[in-house]
Image 1 (cartoon, helix red, strand yellow):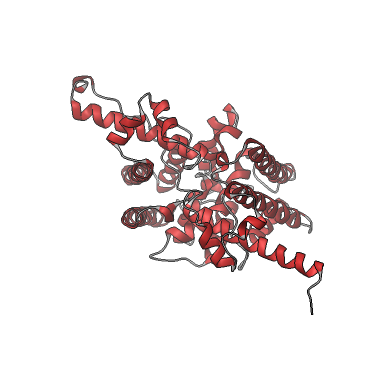
Image 2 (cartoon, one colour):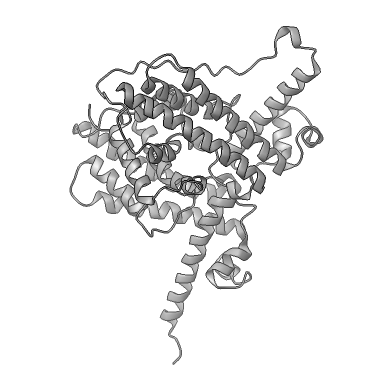
Length: 415
């Protein structure tokens, strides 16, 4: 029996959906340039050439993947908003819908600058509409006394940030994998209550000084000191552009122009683009471990140290002179030895923060939670910041670090 046109359309639609699902996984794990179309085709069960039946080119596939992410978020938010319940109930249902067991992975919107201007405009419009809807849910909850007063325009992308971070968290926690259910529950617990044992106590933490290192006057003619300063400026500029635009949309020429050097200087000091990305990853994790060491030395309560840490990590992402590389996508494209190195650093960080939380529980300033799951999902609350820098106004940028530290401290429930 010959298939009907309706059956053919259904088959094509199902194949197209499978391609988008596999493309989302590839974009999250390897980034745009390292996304293998041949591997995607193999997983779907079609030829590489057949992909072009569904999509014009790689750019269109990325665009459609990002649009699918936005459409899924919008649909899940609409579904979550229909049953009766308060703002927190809606947010919980949205999280459950987005992260239901078996739910297909969505692409993190991490390389929008790779797209054509008209495609970028479409994705930004969809994303901003979703953020506005979540912010209105939060603001409605504040008016009704269901949510504490908060900067909804910053909390909304933080909620989406922790949801989008889950695929990354699963890839990073390879040595001690956490269950999907535990991570979902950790997100809701963090957003409900934060980490403070006494939510009514005022915030008393002292933000860390993130002043960029300067060359000492006595060493301005020291070749090694000057070389290190130039290297730091180069990696900071590259990380800033990679965070803002994505690795694939950022050329070495742009990085060189921003620093005021030639591309040849970058090749001489760091190497090719892959080497530059690796150097930026290493720099970022040195920064993260430095913050972990500061937590250990912090003179004050452990909840204050945790808030100071969150504040610093959020602030750094919005500072062009610091800008640690935000590891939102492409980790699997790194060389094996580098991935192992970063995973080892990640494990040290996890152990450091587990001790901070354990000490905080013992002293009575941090509430008892599933600490490992909470720490695994927590970076999603602030790693989104540099990616969406251009969508925030000056007031939001100035308030972001404090607002996200407050979210970490007391969550969203009324105090």
